[in-house]
Image (cartoon, rainbow, N blue to C red):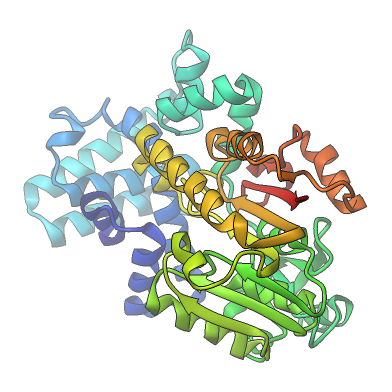
Length: 441
């Protein structure tokens, strides 16, 4: 309840608040999992929960104290979407919290609202006659402006599939450090430890973890055999095509996952220059490299817009611009994103993305590859961005030769020419965009 209230009142990030709250509470694994479900689930279903609560809260949701709103929302979330907690236990717990946090009047109101909900549980359905926009927005709990935008961009059916996928729990995947161990050997070790794992169908270094707890707390992680990374994100390092002896620039590198992946792919032979704007994030990149036993990473701190002040033109064989973006591809991991982002945010970030492309592209040698990636599904930040850049830069074009993996990804995602657009429902991985461009002159 406290985490939900802070997220709403202070605009705090749900993942950071939750991690801090879990550390303070020292819960056993099962309770930590339930707390996580309650926080992310309540935020994910926010406008649906409020839609139904308004029927029962006579003075209106906006008039309630923030913590009371949070309490009612997470209680209704359990009643509507979870089935292992008995309804009477949900109500009792909510009333007890209301008594200890507030006064008799509040606990009485909470008790009355939740008992009314239970009596009318069969009526918790959406009315007939809603427009597709209204229905998707309420059924899949997304803000109307975003649903409207996706219907326009992708069509009604795909827009609904995006929203539904955003409400599913994120999958857990790890990337094998192939400089230390093969994927086959690590899978075998994990199976022997009683874990449920399968090789990723998307990437040759990935493993999907069906059950096995927090992978960042395992010896394999500590000893550098694996990193925790989403499958879509793993495709970015592969798209760069690192080879031993290359000099590669990662413009916006922190926390370093893609930098170390590229270093692993080039067998720790060559140089990866990992740049980030913030000094405190440089340590994150160095820590990653050290944990994985990699020595070919050079870190540098500064605004990526000014990298030409540090390096001469045509210095790099490969450049990765994993650009700052609206993040609308990772809503299932950060559900509060959908309630806080605005159209203005997309406009603003798109102008920065284009400026970054303009400023860093001269650093690529002729014949080299520039990879542009984002964790959003917004065409303005993706396909339209690449089209605009190529229209204004005739010296760049799409690579003449593409790997069979890359061509297959185009086919599987139905992407149209400028790059690969992975939607969250395609592979149950993050929504990502990846484009490869070659400098020809």
